[in-house]
Structures are given as C-alpha cells and as structure tokens.
Image (cartoon, rainbow, N blue to C red; front, side, top):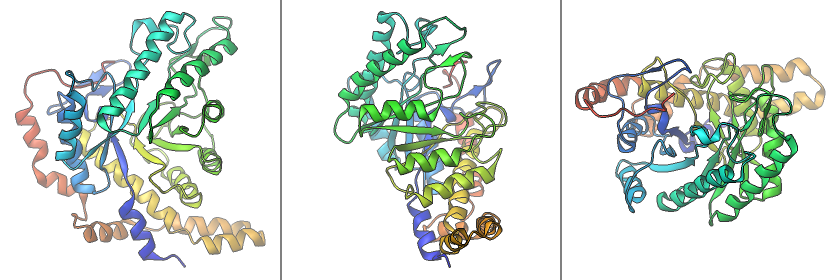
Length: 389
C-alpha cells in the first residue's frame, strides 16, 4: 500500500521552474502573435511569475534567457535578483543564446572560424558572470550548431571544438554551480546536429566532470523514443541534471507539458520517483511557448500537469509491482502501473493545496485575482517582450 502522507509531503516539496520567455510573445517560424498585457521587461516577467507561484505554491524559481533578459548597469542583475526575492521568487537557470546572431550561421561554439568560436565562448562566460550576480546555480546550454549538407564541415572536428569550448566554460564555474547540457535531434540544422542526443550530451558531460549534467527536453526526441529509459539511465549514472518539460506532436512543438501524451509524462515521472530523482538535484523546468493561449493560465496549467503526473507516479504500489516483476507476472505488473495512472489525483492535489494554505483550484484563483485585467490596463505602450522570431 502507498503511504498517502508521504505522497502529500513529496508533492508539497516539489518545485517547478518557470521560464521567463514563456511570459512573453511567441509564435511559429512564420509569425509571432502579440497579446495584451504581455511583459515589457524582465521585472514584469517576474511579476507575472509571482502570480503563478502565488496560486500553485510550487513555482519559486524563474529561468532567465540572455540576451532576452539582459539588464544594464553594474548592479542590474543583483537588482533583478532583489526584485524576484521581494516577490517570493528566486532566479533560476541562466540560459545562453548562441543562435540569433548572424555570425552563428555556420555554428557558434563549433564554428570553423576561431573568431566566431571565441565570441560564442565569451557569451557563455558572460552567462557565468550573470550567475554570480543573481545567485543562480545552473548554466543551461543548448546549441543550434550543426550542418545542412554532407561534406559541409568536418563532423569530428566539430566535436573537438565543442569539447574545447565546453571545457573552458566548465573551468569557470564556481562552487555550487553546474553546467546543464541540452540535446536536440534536429533543427535548425538538418544533416548533422552537434549535440543531437542524450548519448552525445552524456559523453561530453562525463569527460567534463561532476559539475556537468544532461538536460532532457521532452520535445527533443524522434517519434517513438522511450524517454523514460533515457531518464532511468541518466539517473542511474548520476548525470540527470534536469528537464525542460513540454509536449510535441510532430517535432519541437513546445506545447504545454502533458498536452500530447500525459501517459508518457507519467511514465517519465515514475522513473524519476523510482530512481530517487524527486530532489532539488534534478531541476524540473518548463520550456514552452504559449502562442495562441493566454500566458499565465497556460503556465499554471502546465505546473498542475506536472503535479498530477508526479502524484500518479508516487501512487504506484512499488511493493506490488516488484512482486509481480519477480514472479514474471507481465499483466499484473502492467496493471499496477495502470491502476496508478488511472487514479484521479485531482482530489488529492486539492487536499495538498488546502493544507498548504492555497486555493484548491489555482486556475480559478488566478481568474479571481484580477491580475489579467490589471496588466492589460497598465501595460500600455513600450516594447513587449518576445523571442523575436
């Protein structure tokens, strides 16, 4: 039998990091769709993030993206960290950007030109400086580097350049800081991608050392990939640094987590629970673009979806499952998992929120707060935040 008190305790301590860019305007490669009330500055993004944390109680950190969240002045980032703290938040992972500069047309850290590589590495080192100022522990790296045509560049040489650049940045990390290396199957490069899969990311992280770990973006895999196997393996090796949670139907769709395949999210979260990954050492981050839906309610719903999958994973009767597995009872073992997945955990989560002093219904609580109407009325004029596609 599952200890419900232990399940509740685990759910109360879970933390989901929201991304600053999800509060801004986004869209497809064809069009960015503007919405009323969208933040115009990093501070306004934090103001919105505070609303998510206020109604969910489990979203205390916000990831920044540089240069999208760049602030000026010698005390700009310490001031931003103070702004977050005043709203009950902390600044989370610092995400680099080496894919929106004309110099990076043929790559950044893997570019054949040493001058371009130097520019890219310097940007990554700047991100570590920002971590020092904000108190952030994680540097998150994703590279759009790759090639479009056979023969375009030396595949092995690009891996050498990647390793060299990562090593320089790794050496700059301070105490309590780590590097989280993300991978992506393809896009924007279509022939080769320099960090295309978890194996490549793992190999580089293993060589770098204990401060380098792998990030699993749930939308960055080929159709049919068993993501929970990847998660289980990385946890076993002590190399799972975190998640970028989102959903995909076809490619890197960046839809709300759990929207496309909630059963997959449950299976992933079961391996997290099984492998002892429900700790602060594994960062549960959202990486989503809310193109046509309202930003803040979508992020609230995403946090709730992670909570529901986690609750179901915690409800798996692991004793009964182990017995069935040892006995070779294939159907019985599968039934144990399905019983947990088919459990309606919404009443349990309402109890958890009530015990935390929160409204049992975060979506309704936000709707009643008046924040949506307030930001539409007040955020008039200026340049709305967005990722500029």
